[in-house]
Length: 199
Ligand code: GLN
Image 1: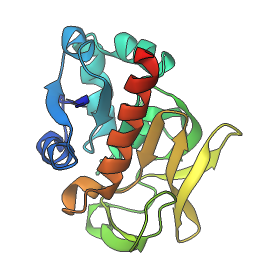
Image 2: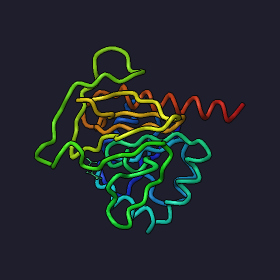
Image 3: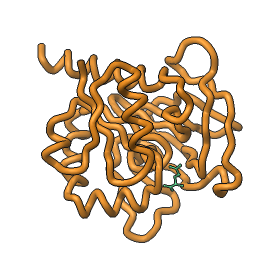
Image 4: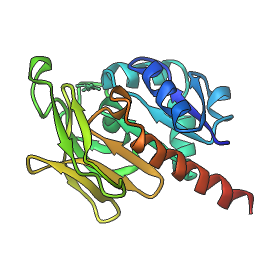
């Protein structure tokens, strides 16, 4: 059974832990480099990307996380987590850093302010059956992707889900819906990676 961490510095950590457990992974919070070293994959939750960025520095996990992502460890970022996986932010707050891993440019708060949060049905490549119920909360969108990144979903003409190798990102929050298909997709990515590594 894959062991998957949730970066637990700020944001909706608990919801991801529950969703991962429901998708048949062993899920645990990760704050420190020693904890990061023990997981097979990592989720970066929704929340506030500037805060997550600053705390990642403070807890000393920014560089170890970059190293693991470079090494191919699967990562999944939702909303603020998507921003953390972008190689470039269009409108970063001062001092805001990202982990990177996906060749994309994201625009923070692109869909509007908190009171413009909304839900929409989203067709996600690789997810069978009904569209995914996308919960968008001050959500970013992806302004553009580079050649290595695959667009998995769009909403209203904007890119809202992307994958590049073992890095997955969505503008929306599947952890809030009780539909665990996106988490299952990620758990499968982790399983494939751990299996390949142990051969
Ligand atoms: N707007 C937030 C940010 O810039 C993201 C919001 C969210 O994660 N729900 O980090």
